Image 1 (cartoon, one colour):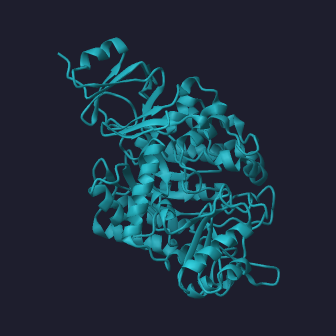
Image 2 (spheres, rainbow, N blue to C red):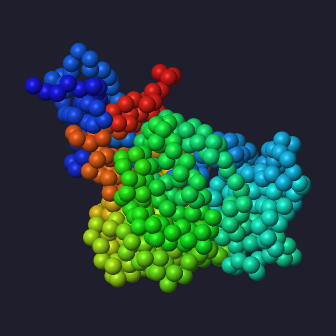
Image 3 (cartoon, one colour):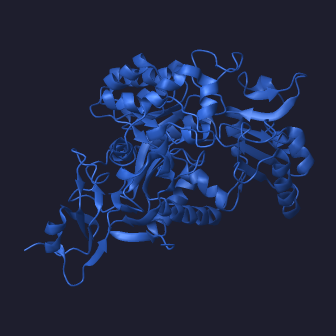
Length: 542
């Protein structure tokens, strides 16, 4: 006699993401695990008097989405303490200044005003805000106005005084931007931008509220697991553990240890972790110690990534490389010896090569089977770099959702190099496991945008295609957002596919995604999200 299920799904398009990419009709859940996957006729034997039966009516049931690269702990700041100035909310610099004026009227002199999300390419002004703009709006408060990528931001005079930033000679070339007369514009990139974060304090209670609010947002998006790609230090991790322990944050977390307060802070934190004896894998199904990460270069859209060849639109623009090869080799080797999976933010092909070299050095001097060392973004590549990724068993973490908002800019910045940017098709052909991440809060967390970007490689604003030769199927894109994410955190045995015995992290979509016109993928909604066999989100407008 079959076990009685708590919940049964039937009459569905159940995308199992198993080794054969099978599509089933029905599934049964008991407790926190999947009990059965198969045909409608066979699931009936698992139904009892108290079994809840959900008729999917042909809609897709998919594994819970795993966002393999998200700045969740940073994103939580938006809830109370950071003003969102993404283009869908503010289109002009004057609009940004008006929000600053409003905040200054509500704050005491000397209290920080923090904003995040502008993109100079999309603002109607077609430029960055300046120190003069921010000084005019809030002369008595330090102001931080961060670009959407997080790699650069504009600061006013008060903020620069707090950070004791007086000119470009204090940092690497290009990190403190000056005008033609040599005067600081307020725009800081990489190290000084990161450093100034350290002067801004956040309360535990505000963080808890932010985590809980955005945990709810993750459920609404069908995201059941997150690989958090960097935070501001121990306070953020501690508060996250608190809300997981008290049951108010159900989403599973794989915490990548990187301190966004700059290169030295990141190095210090990794060596502190090494000294504790902790390493990758410690934890449980809801909170796990992940990789040790460093940041090698800038952003794709800034643009500030480190490229071998000049940018296509501006041959005089220089990308930023934060670490030397010797420094990368040393910290990767030390972290790997201590038991950490290692990874690096590497976007430009120069930085990608540096990351590959560092991983190769660590493996040569400390061989390790099944290491699954990663490269976050692994943006610009070529045939030779991709082949080295394959040979070394590296897991690249791709961000195809970027094409939906930046595709036209990428064509302008990188020309033909976009044909090997986030190279999902080539990875599949070579047997390389790549997982997808949104890089939220750089873009919206919605996995449908990432799937759309991978399947169409289109800019949703302009309709312009970007590297179409790397398009993949909807099924392959779903795998990158589910099973491959579990693989990247050594958890594919317990989640990432709909198979008997695995955790019941499941998502009901509003239609059969496999039969959806690719152009309509962003319109697909999440109707139900289940974690540990419990339905934690249900869409209320159907």
